[in-house]
Length: 261
Image (cartoon, rainbow, N blue to C red; front, side, top):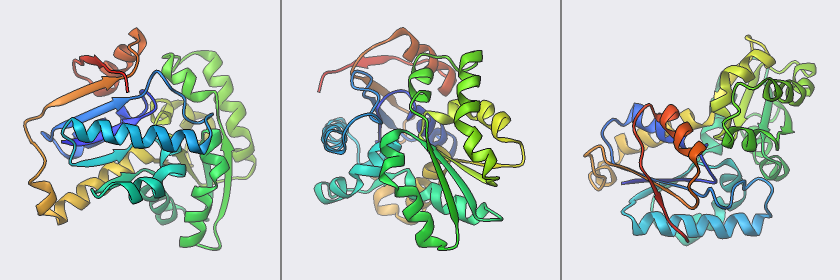
């Protein structure tokens, strides 16, 4: 199985991208809805949660793991790599590579949770690839709760998005990284407010492409993964809105399994 975890529902955008590119592969997902959001937590707490989440996925058959959470990817990747001897993918590196490759003026905007933006990980990785790049980052702490509540098309959400993106519009960025896997659920709204000429980099798509590329070149790992189109969806707290948004995101029936870590 391919294991995927996130602080809540946002990581299902990664699951959707994986299903589109790796049709039929078995996937086990854990959404830590009882402890969401991660973006307001300390680095130590996020690291602890991430280690617990991966242990859970491994116990449920995962042979590789995707950290479908930008906050966890930003602050916990190093500890995770030290702790587990399996292929583990984070969402930051693939997105930064896509941004650098596609940005014409190397004026890149990044939006994410407070923890992700505070870590400076996107700027560090972009600058490592292109020292001349200009990176402008904005924390958008209200967007994750709005997505979790299903307020995707509310006028209040549009107003908040507009306010968050204003500093980036002023900087005249040509590329915008969605530095949180919840944000692809607001991609159309973000595109409208940032402008149609700005290239949107969706980290959920970028990491799914990275996983596919890895499996294409590592048959010894690929053969360990089940391919019966099995999908298990675990959550640490069941909410009616999660089930509704999950159904819409994945375009399939879902069954939530409630667990306590």
